[in-house]
Length: 93
Image (cartoon, one colour):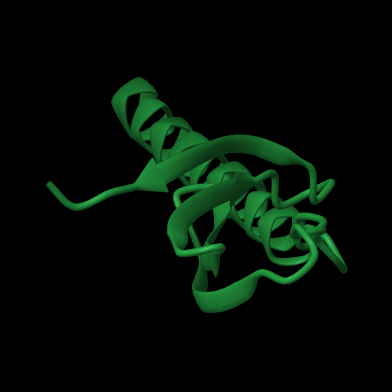
């Protein structure tokens, strides 16, 4: 009789733990689903007279390739604030 009580107790504790795990998974899912999207810059500033060749959002930066006075430049901007973080001149040998 004592063995039957232990087995019943083990089964009920197992079901209780499964219930707690299901609640935890549901809470984590709900928090991750309702997380707001990261902020994005509404505008970035390029030098006057620059002609944009291409732009894309990748690797946590806004990449803009533009031409100005015969020189091609790759500018990297912070996606949250729109500030220039790095500028790379592209040259051909």
